[in-house]
Structures are given as structure tokens and as C-alpha cells.
Image (cartoon, rainbow, N blue to C red; front, top):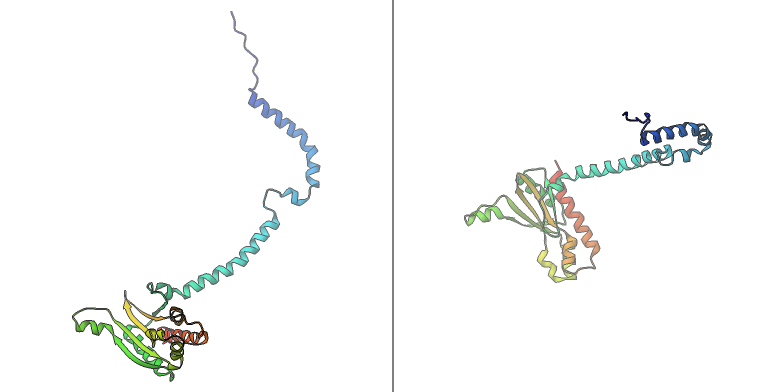
Length: 217
């Protein structure tokens, strides 16, 4: 008894694929003229259109200068970023000079400003040694311009606790820092809101003194 063998034929998947290819070949001559007549925007729909690419390039050209400016500002302000965390209302910068030279530079700058006078110099390290304690170099310079500070006290007498102005110089981790209180913070602390011009002048003067001492040659 012989078994009847079915004639060889592709399985359903192969057959469907073959039929699809055949249909595709037949439709291609029909679809080709239609494709040629489509607008360019239709042909590029769902893909990267040249106009889209050009817009992307233009955006990058606009962004690159902005990123470069941000990077440059970060590099320039690196000394400020390297400063230790300061207390509320306090500015801190890094000096490029040694501790003693930084203190001397501030004293010299104050001496060159007639309206400003150095009233006291507090050497905390020397005071600590008098009682048998050790402290890294830490000095506070107390100075002021009566024409400005007095006006703050006229508005609110309690401002006297923060006046005259002070500039702190200290050494930490192999670096020398200069710190000072922000006049705006002092004014806010004592509720002084009628001396904006005085605060502005004090802010500018302190910043110039500190940066000149820290960065000058």
C-alpha cells in the first residue's frame, strides 16, 4: 500500500510573500507617475526635510555663541566659585596674593581714599596665641566713610551695630580670602528703605577695594 504524497508547494507564508511581490511589481508602473507628481513636501513627510535640517543648523549657530559666553563667564568667575560658603549677606572672593600682602594691599588702598579712614585692625590669630590657642591667619580691618555710614544710622540707629564697615582676610586650605558684609543686607536687616543711593555707593566702594586688593599686581 503506497502513501499518496501531496505535490510540493510553498507553505502559506511563502505563498503570501510571493503574491505580494507580484502585486507590487504590477502596481509599481501605476504608482510611479503619481509619486513623481507629488509635491516635495509630501515626499519628505515623515523624514528629514532639507528645510528642517537647515533650520536645525541655524538654531545651533545661534546657540553656540550663547553657550560659549556662559562657559567663558564660568571660567572668569572660577575664583569666586572656589571660595568657601559664606554667611548670609556676605561676599567672598579669592586673593591671588599671600595673606600678609593682601592685608597690606587693603591698608594701602584705604590710605589712598581720603574720605575713608582705617579705624582698627584686629589680628585674631595674635589674640588667640595670647591665650594659648592656635588659629590660622585671620585679620579684620575696620574702616568707614562717615558721610555714608552716618546716613544709615540716621535712618535707623540700630545700624550702628554693623558699622563701620569691615573687611575680613583669612587663610584656609592654602588660599587667601577676602570677605565683607553687603550694605544691602545691612539695610534690609535694619529695615532701612530710604537710603538706596547710599547703599549703592557703599556697595560699589567695597567691591572695588576688595577686587583691587585681590587681583592687582
